Image (tube, rainbow, N blue to C red; front, side, top):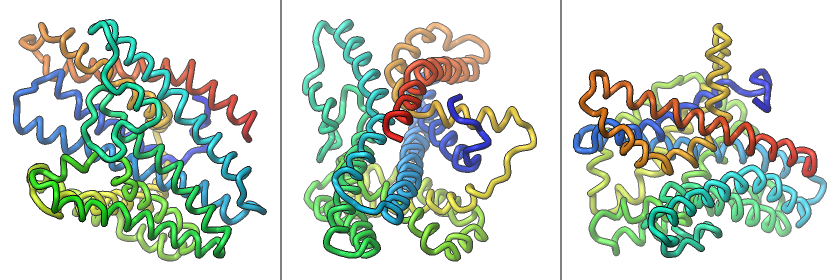
Amino acid sequence: MSQSSSSRNFGLDLLRACAIFLVIGSHATYTVTQSNFFLATLSHCLGAWGVELFFVLSGYLIGQVLLKILDKAPVLDGRTLGHFYVRRWLRTLPNYYLVLALALWLYASSTGGLPRGWESYLTFTQNLLDSRVGFFGHSWSLAVEEWFYLLFPLVLFSLARFFSRRQALWTTLALFLLVPLLCRWALASQLGASPFRMLQKAALLRLDSIIYGVCGAACARYFPGTWVSLRRFGWAPAFAMLLILGLGFHASLEMRGAWAAVWVFPLTSIAFLLLVPRAETLARPAVKAVEQLVTWVSLTSYSAYLLHPIFQVEFARLFNAAYTLPLAAVVKPVSWFVFIGAASWLLYRYFESPILRWRDRVAA
């Protein structure tokens, strides 16, 4: 591990570990059965929750970085913005392009050509205003994050040239909260059938899912009393909201109108944000191995998210003959997690981690 577990927040690492477990676990059903309706619906819900939790955590963590810059940087100019971009892009882009190249190579090897529109994946425009993402489909959420990393600080720093920094922050938060939501509301009435499915993965229409995490970071920094008071509620409000949303998730997939396309996303983000204040104060487990496992899963989660869909179908085919073996329903998902864990560790250990160390030297 490139970072000592003692320098990290165990609770936030635990949430990130839960997020990647939900995503990969939802795809583990492919190694058990693809015909069980209940499992298919449950896995879809849990996988979607994992992505939404990632959005909130990304917003909270990147919000802490940006708010520190906003409060302490002597000048908010192009150089400050460029430094932020360099550090962020060196964190996310090398892994993405390496795994994208691997996916393109595997696709070309099996089909004899490249997928249609593959160039759009280089610029994260594959799902800019459209949810239809085929090849490298899980990249839709990465496009949401990359466009957020590009646009939010650009708008924030630009407004800070004309208003006070605090006014610029509140204005930018309001814009990113309201504009995507109002756009979804306007489009939902025009799309007709299943607006949830049609808008779920449109990058520019989902930026508000990340901004809730930034709102949490702003609350923790500027209104610490309120943030501390949220801890007193514990986990109950968040779990209650998630239970209600989970019970209605399948209905939301087919629901016509504004509820599914407009309100499911922000309510889910708020529910996950309510987990963060309490999670931050979690004590480290008495068993050191548990802490180390959670830290390791958190550190390798980005690599795991990128890699796991590439091997999903091939893994299912490889184990297809074992469907009737005793304990297959247990052995195969466990094998799936072990396989993805090993591949993710290799990518993190020999590619991602060296780049991050280099980034910290050249763009400290």
